[in-house]
Image 1: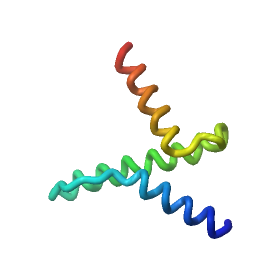
Image 2: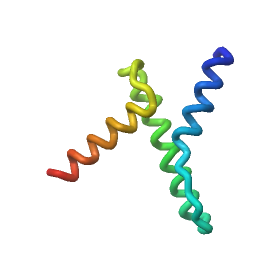
Image 3: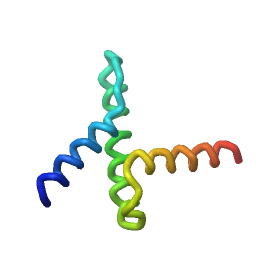
Image 4: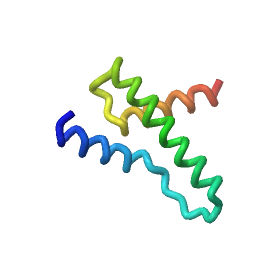
Length: 71
């Protein structure tokens, strides 16, 4: 793994971090776990769609959820 890939991975982690000002640890923990799940699912998705960046993956997930809500 080269240095640029490592830097890119850290940048993606920062994008995935959900920001909260909650004083409740359980809320912060929930957001942290949600971001880890999204990152892990994106890594699996990259095997099939290597061209899809994290932001596009999040948009894809959002569209899928909205589709499910409508039905």
